Length: 307
Image 1 (tube, rainbow, N blue to C red):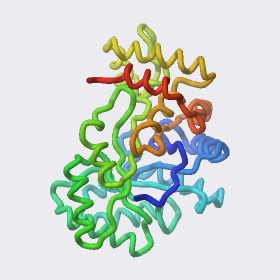
Image 2: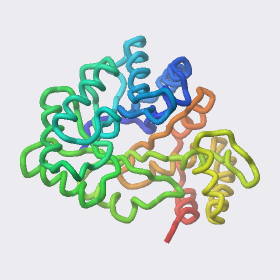
Image 3: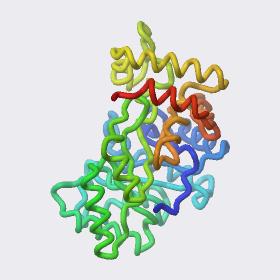
Image 4: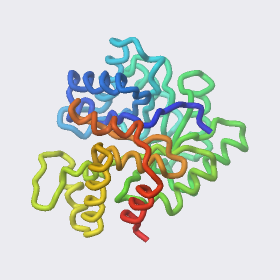
């Protein structure tokens, strides 16, 4: 069971140093905290995929912001290891080096939550569970989590930790939203069974659930291809119509409704969402204190069901 308070929305840092430059990133972070936001999610690889980047850009920006604002103790900070080009995988030696790199970039001596960004079939689970426990005992990490693990590997990881008196995973992070509900089949039940919490990413389906993607409308975005693809399914168009209706009735954004729905799901205290401009943030922040009615939840469940 986690001891961390993530609030009701986690700010995704994947855009920092990619589609949001340092100045805009600072504005987004300031506005998020001013609105009551508590938790920031990043990874050592963000954003190595962008031209001219090598990885670590997001951590560096967040670290500079934390140092300039002097607010490290009031923020729940999460980062990840596995996918940085120079620090791949979960071998114990690599994890030890990667966490030092992240701490240096983040300008802190600990992170609240440290994820395995992927499972590593080339490293025995006993080995990486042990090194994560080592980091917790050293005070460099408060809790550890897993991203996109299978249900079976989540179960085995937690069992190994329990059997050996080591620090277990407390958080799972997986793709989950109103149009991508695949984790409900096996991963989410495992998360519940093990007493973990789920912090979903892709919470807005690459922006599709914000409502900006419509038939015949072109959107200038690096994620446009993925999001626009959802328009090919008639049920997704019906879902957009329902989100339009509910958002209008509640006087909030479609994104806020979609994010609030995630908080009604089992074991989900807060979804992860990112804003590449400060102007995009209010639509996300509206979700933080939006509680859907039972009828609204049923309507969204039915409209988004893939059964």
